[in-house]
Amino acid sequence: MAGARELPPDDVLVSRLREGHEETFALVLDSWSGGMMRLAMSFVSTKASAEETVQDTWLAVIKGIGGFEGRSSLKTWVYRILVNTAKARGTKESRTVPLGSLLTEEEGPTVDPSRFRGAGEPYAGHWAVGQEPQPWHLPEEQVLRGEVRGVIAEAIDELPPRLRAVLVLRDVAGYGSAEVCSLLAVSAGNQRVLLHRARALLRGKLETYLTGAHEAVAGRELA
Amino acid sequence: MNCDEFVELVTDFLEGALSEEDEQRFVGHLAECAKCERYLDQFRQTIAATGELTPDGISSDARGLLLNAFRDWSRP
Figure 1 (cartoon, rainbow over the protein chains, first blue to last red):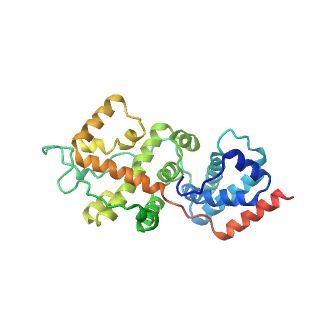
Figure 2 (figure 1 turned 180 degrees about the vertical axis):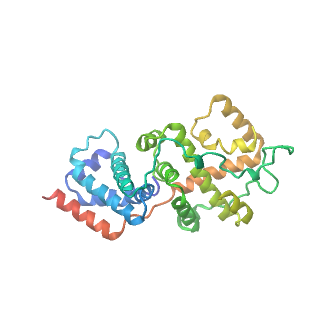
Figure 3 (figure 1 turned 60 degrees about the vertical axis):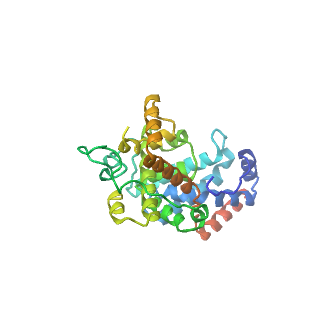
C-alpha cells in the first residue's frame, strides 16, 4: 500500500528475482526500502545505521532468495530479516527495544485529562468548553504533496521506538495486527495499546497544525 | 460512557476488539456526542493520511550498490 506501485504477485516476483531479473529487483527495492528505513529507525540510533540495516537486509535477501520457501509473503519474509538484522544491530549499539510488556510511559490517557470536565463538575468526563476537537480541513492533495505529509513524517520520527515500530507496520506498511504481533513478538492487547498511543499522538500533532496551533492545547497534549 | 473513556477505546473499536457490551456503550455514546463523532472521524483521517505517506527510500549510493550486488550474485 502507501503509494507503492503495483507489484506482480509473489510467485512471479520470486521466480524473476531468482532468474536475476534486475528490473524486478529495482522495483521491490524502490517500493519497500522507504518503509524499511522507517521501521529500522525504531531499533537503531541513527539514520546512517538504519540505512546500513536496510542494505544488510537486502544483501541477505539477494543471497537467500533461492531458499525462500513461500511460507509467508515475500514482503513479510524481507521484513522479518530486517527486524532481526535491526535488533542485532540495536543490541550492539546498546539500544535494546524490549517489546514484550508495556512501559509505564505507555500507560495512562492519550488525551490530556484537562481537556475533559473534572470529577466535581456537571457532565464530568465530557469535553470541556473550548477543549473539544475543532473541525479540520484536510484536503487529499494537501496530504499527498503538502505540508501535512511533512507534519506526519516528522511526528512519526519523533515517536518512541516501540510506538513507531507498531505504527509504521500497521498504518504505513499496511500489515494486519496478527502479522505485527508475530513480527515484533507482542501480544494482541499490547499491540493495540501501542498503536492507539501512536495514532493519538499523530492526531494531536495534526490537530495542532490544522487548527492553527492553539498553543495551550498543543503544549499540554503533546507534553 | 463518558468522552474521556471513549477517546481511549477508538483503536479497540476500529479493530473490532471491544466486548459486545463495550461496543454497545461506545456506539451509544457516538450516536449522542457530536464532539466524539468528530474525534473518531479525525482519528480515521489521521490513519488514512499516514497510509498515504510514501516514505523516503535509501540513498542513491546504497541503491546503486545493491543493484550491483544483485547483478553480481545472479551472475557468478
